[in-house]
Length: 235
Image 1 (cartoon, one colour):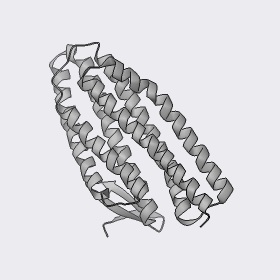
Image 2: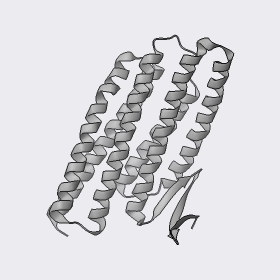
Image 3: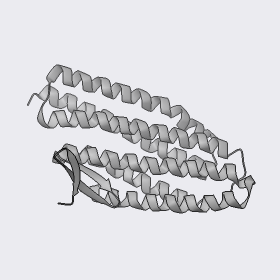
């Protein structure tokens, strides 16, 4: 294999991971701004969103250079095409961190509605999912794939619990509606980040296995195409 191609692909992969670690920090800071009621931290995350956008553009440009100069096949091609998709998902996570922080700034204009319990639990699970997903892409190792799917199911259950509790607050008094809605939006963004982490897992598994898998409830299922129709298979 062309050693120059190997080096370029490795540098490309490091660029994708650098963007991933950057949004990990953004997600942590966006949640910390909520828990600590920290306006400056929320504003830092909002400013960081442009950095992630630029990283995604640079990753795409490097991918096009590799594809154009080397016409890679096999593992290098899978790494580059997967990296493009992972970078897109990372950029989407950055957007969600931006949205959380915007909600936090609006929420901080009001007194606290209630002690935060389940939303930080959602965030902790999601942060761990994101870390596992990025490590999977870095190490080309799908060992934690099933575990990430199970964690996504936990996040979904916590979101439903948060939603039901906040709906009760909104029904109790109109004065709670704005704060409850903002907290519900934040919970929804966290759930979306968890879903994006599972998407990173799915494309990373494809990079390793060469077949499409999907997280469904708390399992990772193989999808095969038969007669133009996708069907689930647990083998």
